[in-house]
Image 1 (cartoon, rainbow, N blue to C red):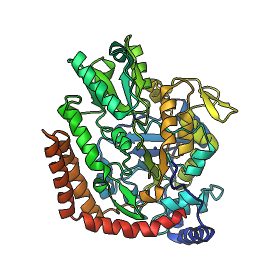
Image 2 (image 1 turned 90 degrees about the horizontal axis):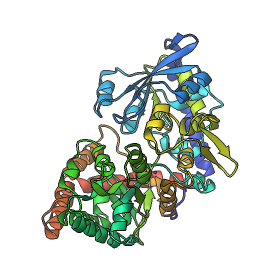
Image 3 (image 1 turned 60 degrees about the horizontal axis):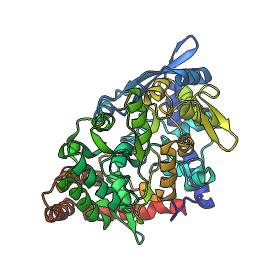
Length: 517
């Protein structure tokens, strides 16, 4: 997806300086380029633009359904959608220059934020949509070293925004573990209020139900829940702060204890070795919904989603969520600057129509449409300050078929958080618990290596090494072996230039953290 260091509004002098910088960056060249582009193809008064979505797992692969139709009705734009086949497709398109009109990406935000590839939003706004207003914080965190911002990432909210919207509890992008209620009952309903309680119950399951997998984990969410229980500030591929200095996550004190814990789960037979090599992220769901697993680690929506699937298959059992905090140290540190950003490429046939599309999607009406659905048909507004949904938000088939929550070329964390508030849902309770232990440190999110930089090369090599080595730690034959492998992994990272990377990160941090004073 929050108590120690909140977002604060930018200092007045910074806002003025930034605004002047953005205005001066609106060069003649970009305006002329935009004007010289051919107009978008038009059919029946509707302009067609191409969109590449840089996520192979994206569920909505065609521009159809009530939300897409409503966007076309409001903007006069239809999108011809292509979803990535793998994570290498967009880099190859960039290298060849074969780009569509619009690109939605997360992993390639830095690469696409290049005046050779994309139009700066600030140029397009000044020329075509001067009434499109963005707040200084969002401008600041998306502005590149050249003074331009080429996108505004979705799913972002300041701590103040979240605090002002008590029903904005977050989205499914938070970790959670669900357990079988019927199996717990068979075991005598042992309490699970602590991490030790949970491990004890896993042992009881293994003993009483030897053919059942005690815990199955989504391949993309293996570590997050447990890292939070240990109070780790930085999750994988991230930075943490200690007394005003930053360091890479593998050197934070909690990591060794986390690895020892994960290794103990494996050595006790509570998790499968093959879980770390699942071919896709549906295998864990199959284990859970078919009755082959007791506990299912994925997101805060796991119990609701699993129960919906079990009900459809006429199953007779159900899952319930564990508390989001099973230790006194549990916390979530949010360093996010948002998730994905939409880019108007230099190949774009109609930059004016594109920025006006984004302007509509950034409006209150547009954000509610893409996140909740069509007002009146899918939801009504509750005067307490949240939407009353007319559908089951855990029904992924319905959500996908209608495009709810998918056409988020622009949105924010508040709207995403409001959709998460559904009275009576286990997910809602889990999100409220998560919100209570969340700390915001977005300044850490500004430490980003640039494409083709020495720091990027060092970090990529270290991350690839860690990706391979961490599994050997999980699967070590003894705790002593796990500790030795962890220490060796850190040593390898240091030999690969970790300290040089950390020194660069601290220099960058000193420059960037002032944005939040």
